[in-house]
Image 1 (tube, rainbow, N blue to C red):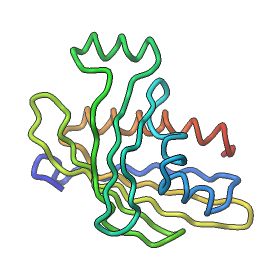
Image 2 (tube, rainbow, N blue to C red; image 1 turned 45 degrees about the vertical axis):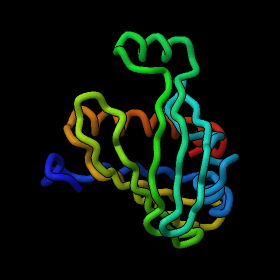
Image 3 (cartoon, one colour; image 1 turned 90 degrees about the vertical axis):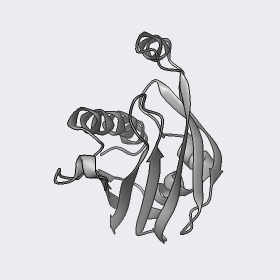
Image 4 (cartoon, rainbow, N blue to C red; image 1 turned 180 degrees about the vertical axis):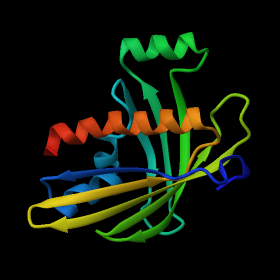
Length: 162
């Protein structure tokens, strides 16, 4: 947590899917899995490195690929893509992942770390997935993070149902 977000609550997003924990785990830990769903609707990612072990890297490009998203990025004077990188800081196979992303792509904002914890709770033929984000540097950006993540979860909602 950085000083700018001290005292603000974490953001928690939860979904239950008709899937196996192995299916969900692979979406977070393999190039093919991550690329199949990561990014809000209208965006995609190209993964350059994914090494799901403590200290392992996650490097990818976030790319606007829908015409309306490309136009929106242009209207905000932002590039249609940006490099993103982070580190796996905790890995408990099929149970828990912790990723720390470096937020260094926001104009006028000093780079800082943002932590995301993903927990999996299998029960029968369903898995509850709980994702907890540290708050971003301001409330507006935290809200955009939550909205963006909810958008990308619609890709999993369609695949597995909720």
